[in-house]
Image (tube, rainbow, N blue to C red; front, side):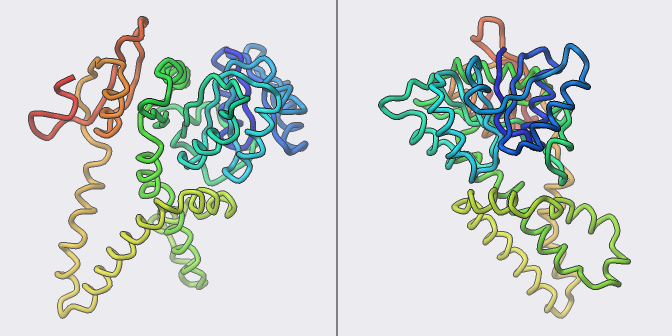
Length: 339
């Protein structure tokens, strides 16, 4: 497939490398000339059958593409979409931004007006990354075994476009999780965005030299993502503020309960019921999986799959069914049993 990747940071650069390694014809573009130069040098050093090209403009990158992947931080998305539209691009667009509702709205505003002929848009978000950033950190294997959300909006998203992208992403070794943009944003607020805020707060609280000398595994693991560039954390959390705010409120309320337990006459005993739910959840994650199952390739079935914590691992040749994996039900009558 002819693919353009706009934005060659960690995620965009990794997508560029992975797609080229899997035989796709890939053109990349980045607004930073130094990044473009680094990517060109890396392409020349890549194996002959896994090389890519780097263009000097977005227009040149998208000219012959069937698919454009927008891989820039949320604040840069409007400008990129405007340039894609100005280039007259009429193919499929996806993105890898960590918040989906704002990007969906921007696409509606900038690429689906009365004079635009955009074929389709499917929001995406690979749940993969590192605390390091930039093209120099890009890795063709970054997406292997990661969950890659592909948004499916009932009555809006083309199922054909969605299945095209699902096959492409599965080919990179990822697990395709269907979700609506709104449900995605609520989920990542809890498991990704708020953890960045908590990690940053914890890291800032450990400025004491003695604390730094004693910090070990729990501090390292609990603060790893605090090393992410501050502007990226601000973009993901601020861009998803309607979901991050309530999620953070819930965490603050839970911590206030723990704080109150510490004032109890017997704080060790008082903390135990507070600790139990989190311990049980973490001990059971990731969950035991049920045997793979074929389900109809219908939007309603796919959305239910995502809500059940499952993912797509293959699309049938005739596209009538998908092979899925989901957590084993704790009792009879799981959410997909009637499909």
